[in-house]
Image 1 (cartoon, rainbow, N blue to C red):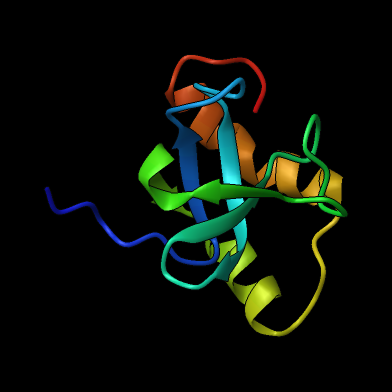
Image 2: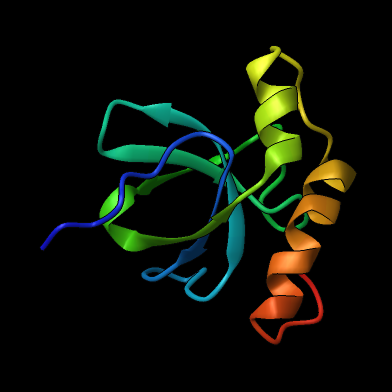
Amino acid sequence: MNKPLVTQADVVVSQRGHDAGSVMLVVGMQGDRFALVCDGKLRMAERPKLKNCAHIQKIGRSQQAEERLGSGHQLSNSEIRKMLLPFSIRLGRKEP
């Protein structure tokens, strides 16, 4: 089964665990197998969750996050929530 590769600044949905169904932003990678994800609300930018890439599904990419993270800036929790809002609405959720 070929899954699309998840990279920094991708927007993903958690498929497994207590956070299943949550929309999150990939803020970093640890190797090819693990992604550091946060949503800016329950999982803050200061403590991103280490998530197995097999347990998340890519649903899009945030250009804003790509620009900010690519230039070495840290994202605030409010910025992350604003970036995730359009994806959450598209999935029929009110909040990220």
